[in-house]
Length: 609
Image (cartoon, rainbow, N blue to C red; front, top):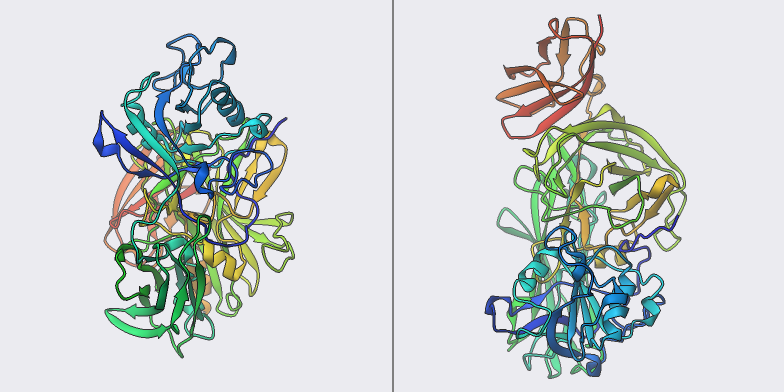
């Protein structure tokens, strides 16, 4: 079986800053609102160094292209396929393709054949560049396959939504939609710049305060790459970092003055600015905002001079996460991914990593995961997901060792079945069967397992155009050299293959882990009773409630076909809820608890008399 994991990043690359390569629409007679830049993924490396593509080095100004965008007509039978992804527009049928693309930028859809053959077909018909539109979500990376080494024109992918915006104005002949792909030329004489991908962040967006109560337990390192994006040299530049909580700046540090050369045609003069470490005697529970500020007198473009991120120290309902969290400490997502980019696959797992030197000393347990999913094709009824926690027992120093995934020990799991589309994109909490006690210095993976090609896993992603609000760990990875959000796939049942960088360091699984730090023997005993009991039940079932849940709870009992067999509303009073199941037939069921804050717990229970 031929595996085609065409988009997952495996190795971390050396870091340097190149001139910015952009794709933008420069003119559109049909819809001027499309005249802006777009997020994309290039075929291979922008510097032309890829081994499975022969695409040009786009860092060289002379390789930039500009031309009319034309929708491909490969001559296959019209009307086959699902709109708008008709096979006539997928650039696969070379034998019947008579369209002349001389001097044009070819546009076609993903699907039916390899990435490489599509671009090669367009190139043979005179195209100066090629754009492939994803048929499912945002742009992803591409492998060259058999024909990638024959592709010598610029070739890039854009996302499904952006593609629909452009295709609405395209035809198989030029309609006046002109695009540019190449270096972004400086717009200002004085313009110091950076981006979220270039700033050093904490290794997690949230961690329980009991695991990071002092600066010795959780020091913050600061640094950021800055570069001269103007056409003049810049002198006397400084960079400042500020740490603020509740409107009060608790820490600030400013660099020495820095000088930058004017850019040449390939590289922008860049420097990494080390801004030290903040390690207070004691951290305070709450939300910290870390802000980087580039100080450059006379800078003409201040929009790319200030960047910030949030870091939370949680308590009571302790939460650990890599993605951004909302005000209720629930994961924030702005996109979702499915693994139907492979020809054959059985399942995939999206994960976040965890390791603490004091987790065992603090009697830390992990009780479950909060996450959300979205449908691929509009429906998610009867789709099944599993929350898992693994011991990651492979021995390695960092991702350059490299990190391996050959010794994973599944500690516990919990499952959930979507009954309909009402939870599309909505966070749910799925507990493990039993709380998992975490040990000192042990690596763990907290993962969501998806068996279906009908579900997307939610992610928190960053790109400068479509999702500037997102999160990007690129510089953080280069600093700490530890994995953030790996992905595993079991393709065609042939065994697991893991990718340290997952969908890229600008894509973080929108998963949070609910933890508890027991402070006494009573806490430990309570943590061991988070599952309904007795299980199997006879007539009465006791359902434990996570601490800090208040108000009312709706309880639904569903059979494994999704049929509702019992519903009840209960008022919470800091003790387990009693449910009478005497009228329920013997069998296995899913119990769903919905709290007033819209969070949910899901348990598997059995009735057996």
